[in-house]
Image (tube, rainbow, N blue to C red; front, side, top):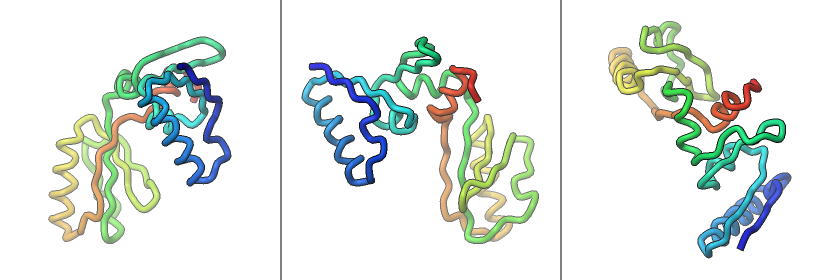
Amino acid sequence: KVLFLDEPTEGLDVQSRRMVIETIYRLNDMGSTIFLTTHNIEEANRICERVCIINRGKIVAIDNPEKLKGAFDKSRSIEVAFDVDVKNGFFDSDLISKVMPCGDKTRVYTDEPDRVLKFIVEKAGEQGLKILSLSTCGPSLEEAFVRLTGEG
C-alpha cells in the first residue's frame, strides 16, 4: 500500500497534529509506504526515515535525515542555561566561533564540542554559577536544506 499525504498537519491544533502523526507511524508499521509533502522541515526530520529535498521542481538530495544533516557542517552547537545572567566575556575562547542568545539559553557554536563542554563547566565552577541545562546540538535539517538549495 502507498499513501500520499500533502501537508497533513498544516493548520491543526496540537492534539490533532499528534493524532495524525501517530496514524502515520501506525500505517507505516503496518507496511504502508507513505509519501509526505511538507514545508515543516523539523516535522519531516522527526517523522521520516528518508527525506527528498526538491528545489524548483528538481530533486537535489535523497537520504535519511541524519546523513543529510551531517553532510555539510561538522560544526556543533551547545545550548546552556545558568541560574543567573553571565558576564560579558564568559564565552571568550578560541574554541567558540559564535555565541547567540536562544530564549533563556545561550547557544555557542564550535568544531570541538567536547573541549567547549569542559570549558563551560570549568568556567561556571570557577565563577560559582549553577548550570540549569546543558546540551549539544548537531546541524539541523533546515540548515541542510538551505545549503542544498542555496536559498538562505
